Length: 497
Image (cartoon, rainbow, N blue to C red; front, side, top):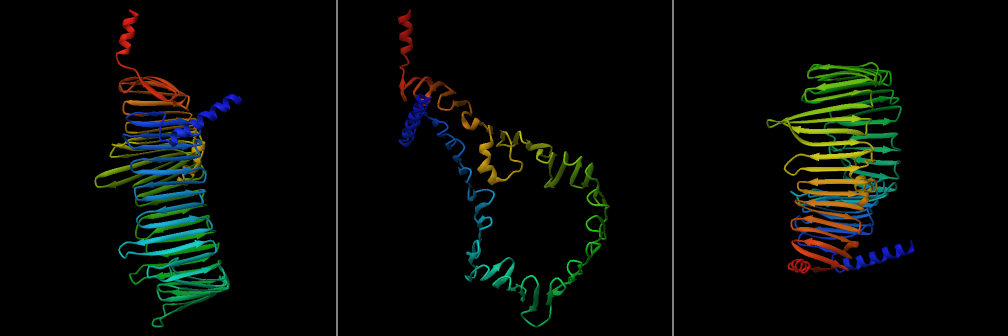
């Protein structure tokens, strides 16, 4: 065992030395390769400009494609850049950095929330940076702001407000809105006073002493509550004639009346009735979520949960049988004389089969039998097939997929047009094929190359090899290729005769 470990260490140091000198154990007119798995694996395809570097198995991975490149230092960090769009995922799902031609954002829950909004037409930027309790920023008009929460601070053009000032929050807060009115909060959320900045027409006013009483008028909206949330009343009426009236006597009775529909709820959320005014629609929940019936224009539905449920619209269909064992969803989109149809089957929530076709021609297919296998196929001029086993992550998230899934995959298969890549046991065995040329590798122990005028095999990453490379008979000894003269075989056969 000790002899084996010393031999592995010797080969590892030798290969690192070769790699550092940019001399590769295997190189021909099409590619360069170094495979000393699991320590380091490097491949470069000269024809399609694809590069891959793996260090320590799935832990470190770097790749470069013609329009995409990425780096992963798993399980902590992954980055990917596609043309001008760049995304970075760190300690997923907590940290995300995104950058494109319009925005730059950085988020690390719950400490950092940074966003730069670019405004190309004005050639200005709104910048802000949040570092837990400290924040600062700059508006597109070069107005600066900042603060140290909860002691003192000021926001400008943030959270949909013109300006927010706080002193010893929640003791005092002042909010200025873009509609030229402001609100002052004392011991938020208990006391709030609303008033208009310009005293021409009183459209904004009100106050509250929560939870006992409150009354506010904000333009076309008016709100009132008594002993919140037991009695709440809201109304809205626009100059165009749109209106909405809501009354909540929680939880016994609720009513909502608008220009388009009317809704009544008794003992929320169990019993509900909705009917349309400007269109045909009737909905009855009695009680929710166990029974629901819908009848209307281009819509119908019936649910007896958890046994059966159906919702059918003119361009979609949803139903389930014995939820969560099986559910089905279908969407139809018509555009420019083209019909796009997507169908999706779900089994026990996490397993699914989805396929999309356009005017009866398949576009893509995706399936997942959780936690066993995942597959994806794209049918187009640049067809793609991708499979892996097992599929342990129940839901898809790009950060989780890039940072963790490589540890969980024992088998991977990828095919794009005439390029095929297969990896087994984190790369212990790998197979690549491009057009009519293929390469198989079993770690650093064995490499087999087949192609036009090529039939070659080598062992221990080039320590010894023989065969035909690009039409030339070759013998490799101690990483050095010796080309055999073409007439040598003829001389040997003559001597034998």
